[in-house]
Length: 168
Ligand SMILES: [Fe+2]
Ligand SMILES: [Fe+2]
Image 1 (tube, rainbow, N blue to C red):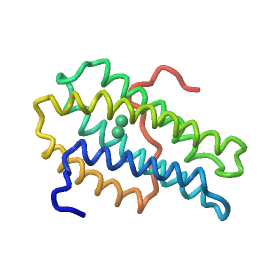
Image 2 (cartoon, rainbow, N blue to C red):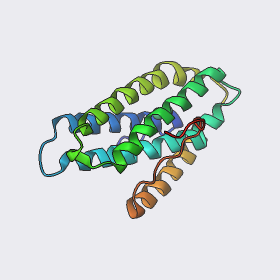
Image 3 (tube, rainbow, N blue to C red):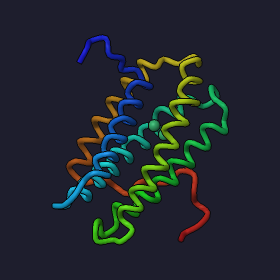
Image 4 (cartoon, rainbow, N blue to C red):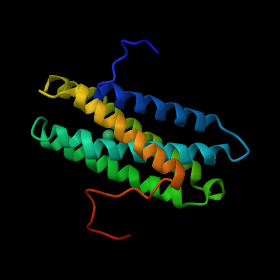
């Protein structure tokens, strides 16, 4: 890896986005031996960690620096994805007739969310007065911590932060 490679907050979050896109692509082509289930579990873990890091560290740093609507919509999109993640994690994997459809719809939701972050949010963040290197350090440290924890004890059910009106 080149030494000049940026590890500021935006670069790290974009690396995560590319990694998950690749996993979804692998899922599309996967066959047999529970490969799809393993990939789905990995996708869910990566997404739970990524959304958690953004909600704990990145989005709070943007409060007051970006349009409130942009942040609120991003958080609702996270929660909407978490519902599918929780369903996929708790489900019966490939024996669920809707398993592939659930992962595919999750992929579509994540693609939409990533596009908004990268095309609308991140350019605004670059213009704001923020120490993106310091934020990047915090993000990298927290990610390492969560990865270790989840690899040992499994991915927890993600917590919703914007939806509490209904129990379905
Ligand atoms: Fe993201
Ligand atoms: Fe996000």
